[in-house]
Amino acid sequence: DAKTTQPTSMDCAEGRAANLPCNHSTISGNEYVYWYRQIHSQGPQYIIHGLKNNETNEMASLIITEDRKSSTLILPHATLRDTAVYYCIARQSSGTYKYIFGTGTRLKVLA
Amino acid sequence: DTAVSQTPKYLVTQMGNDKSIKCEQNLGHDTMYWYKQDSKKFLKIMFSYNNKELIINETVPNRFSPKSPDKAHLNLHINSLELGDSAVYFCASSPEGLADNEQFFGPGTRLTVL
Image (cartoon, rainbow over all chains, first blue to last red; front, side, top):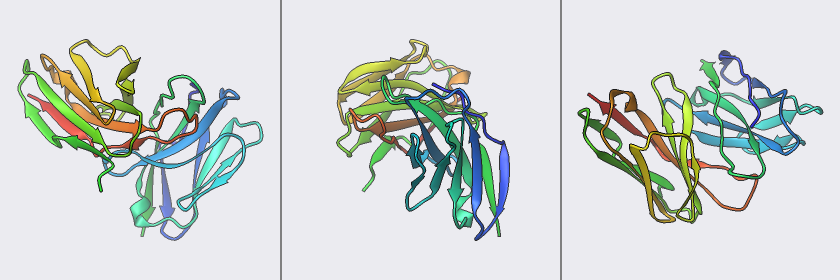
């Protein structure tokens, strides 16, 4: 599975968009990009995933570059409850489906 | 309704003891996992079972033995507990057969070994 690189921490003002980058330059063609978050030592929570195309759901948008070497998770209107550690994971589409979590980005949403 | 539940939530025990953590999912998923999150917050997979069959074993010491009595349950038994086993253990589940499925995590069990 591809290694991902994320900034250690970020701040975002409440109500503004939070843009969390992820670098996965060694990603292979059959690896999906997943985003999870972990709020204060709770279990990780799924946010969104994609392969090539940009994706949007009720929580966030995922923008994947055309070469697939990087992606950005966008929380369109961050709230205080979005303060969490956000993990970007590249996972194969076949095999054992295991996740390899990195260190993630600690997002702090400021009032 | 709790999708993935774990018991106990907290577990404090002495070195050398044997303990178990239980996990149950009511999502009808075929695959279940155990993860360990250490004090530095690294989250690492330990085991995965699919339909009661072990499919992932990430070089975990053999003091750790997962048991899956049925596909809704995956318990983790730990023998001869050591200080380094102190961590938060998360159970997760996912449906089988879909490459792009998500995992649902339980609330975690915080194990402290004294």
